[in-house]
Figure: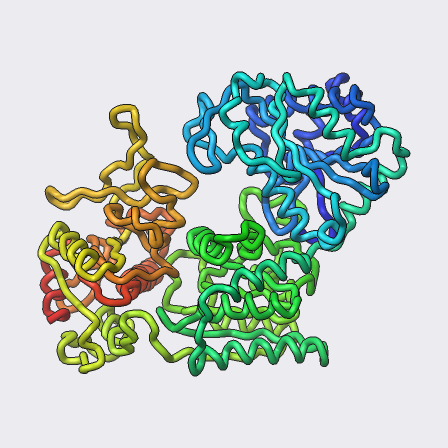
Amino acid sequence: MGERSVALVRKSAAAMLDDAQAGRLIPVLAEQAAIALNSGVSVAEVRSWDRSLPAFLGDLVDAGLGHVEVLLEHQLPYSPKRADVILCGVHPRTALPSYVVVELKQWSRAEPAGEDLVRIEHYAQPVLHPVEQVRRYCQQLVDFTPMLAERADTVHGIAYLHNALDTGVWSIRQYQMDAYGTLFTLDAKQALVERLRSRLDPAADRDLARKAAEDLLGAELAPSKMLLAAAAKEIREREQFVLLDEQQVAFSTVKAAVERSRNARQQTVVIVLGGPGSGKSVIALSLLGELSRQGRRVLHATGSSAFTNTMRKIAGARSSQVKSMFTYFNNCIDARPRSLDVIICDEAHRLRETSVNRYTTKAKRDAARPQIEELINVAQVPVFLLDEKQIVRPGEMGSESAIRYAAEGLGCKVEVVRLDGQYRCGGSEFYDAWVARLLGLRRDPAMPWSKLVTREDEHFAVRTARTPAELEAWLLGRQQEHAGTARIAAGYCWPWSDPGTRGGRTVLVDDVVIGDWARPWNVKPAQKVPDAPESYFWASDERGFGQVGCVYTAQGFEYDWAGVIFGPDFVRRGGSWVARPEHCKDPAVRRADGSHFAELIRNTYRVLLTRGMRGVIMYSTDPETQAYLEEMAA
């Protein structure tokens, strides 16, 4: 992503095959990968290249396509993912540039594992179907390369299982295929050759293939008009969001800033501040839909994989294309300045100091700017929606002052909108204040709920349980009686194990053990366990009940009834809260110094206590703390 696309190695198929046969290609590719990724390349990855690339390049040359330009390990726009191979040439019918994205697999056998997953021998868990993988790569390439989106029959996708016979993978061939995703095996090589020759002209001039590669590598990268139209249709056809009071003010402020940027070329940063349930994400989705409808170049970004994946699922349920509108803060690390009209940074309290990670290339690492500056730089109107009291992890630094300082330093106009309403927790502003007092986040002393509650707040339930089993039973009762949703979340005070096996099946481990009550944490990110939702969807999938969520899977979400277990990391002693890092199992948080650790833990329990829309029930493993909670819930 950025001003130009990047491939690790680029040559004609014939020249690249010569390098492969001479033993030069793989060392050069490994060297380029090590430089680009600023880390070593695994033995398994080098072995994969060595087994896949010479065979595929030989097939290309045998098909009369030796002149085709080959891009290896090409980074996709607005994504950290890389396509194995992109072939650049000329279409035999239209004489226009034509591109084929290829995903190479060494598999000899594969079995379906449900939906779009396949199971491979010796792999610890299922992986994405290769046809679906290459299809998504094609879609990402088209959606964010306007040059490609505006041309018909430009991009095609192929998954090539060059070690597999049809008999070994016949069951995954039933997967739906189209122009963006078609599967070929070793004994379907002739069909592969025919497909390639139908997309890349064998008789085309070598210079035309080279120019096609140059066009792609130099193309402007931004959301395409087709993608914006799809997002507008998908979001606006759903139930309309009703924006109230300050929510509408925020919405209108952003729209005015967009118009102003167009007419006066004034870059404006809009900061929207609001507590839990104040409607920040409703504003974000409303803006995304409206600006897409207007044809503005707009993206939604967060720093949370759980939140981003859930937004993709909700807003892109009927259109996989729309899912690419939801990205991450660190995907803007080298974006071209003003390549977007608007970037909507939701959950912006999760901003980090920089976007650098272990996959960042050395060149990008050396040139890295503060993440806030990167996000301001990428759009004419950057919008930051945040709650400063939801910073729960070291390194998170999204605050009004930090964003304002960066924006003014870059010469931007700054506008701030404060959201005062409470649309979660039964609409009870008193409950939000009660939680802040309970946790010592306000100077006002804590008070029992019954002394703060008004007639309007009576329908929001505040309870305590004497045991975790009683807490769970109360939540189950609420679910059954009111047909609502309920979840149990806890402080990160127990180990979080990888899944185990029982009776030959993968199962979660009961890590959260309190007396004779034991339950597992939610599934770890990037892992899959039968009958349990992925970590991204713990809060929204009904199968999430029965697992204990942590702040990272609960933050940003809501459910009807919230169960909160206070662990030994945050206890009452002598009338005050005491934060105890020795009981915290989160390595990053545990390393924070004393006062910072205490702040993070308070914020963590504030997040957990403010997820419920109709009620909350609390339990502490510590007797003195439990007595305090019972007094305050009375």
